[in-house]
Length: 176
Image (cartoon, rainbow, N blue to C red; front, side, top):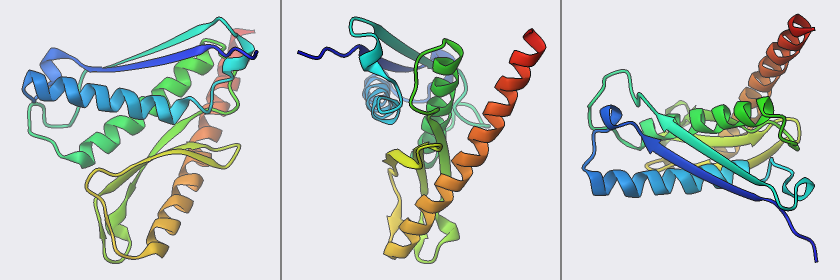
């Protein structure tokens, strides 16, 4: 019987960064934790450490440029994209075995005809795979717009992953 490691995620808002009532904040944190888990679990090689446990804890200390303003799902897409990329960096820095570095991107759907909102896309750029898509209030009336948006997300994530790799290689070179 094959046994895999365990991966858990937790997203919390710092008390000074929260704009919601406590019960709404708890449900939002749970929802973001589940979305983060779905975004990164396909990147981690859980089978390499059968009894291992990865715990990812994200603390959001600022959620917008204007603190304490009621936010909409567009801001949540950006928050989730940052959490995905930050988690990927943390897992890579901790020497976790990964299939690829998960990268979060935000696509502004207003650039496409008859669309609105922002889409958060978690991408495994080297594998050219999309691991999660979140759009809380996205309106898409043209199916080609979604295809173009996902293609743009793959391109943006590829550029970000190359930047991350160059920075990590430079850090390793300096450290030697």
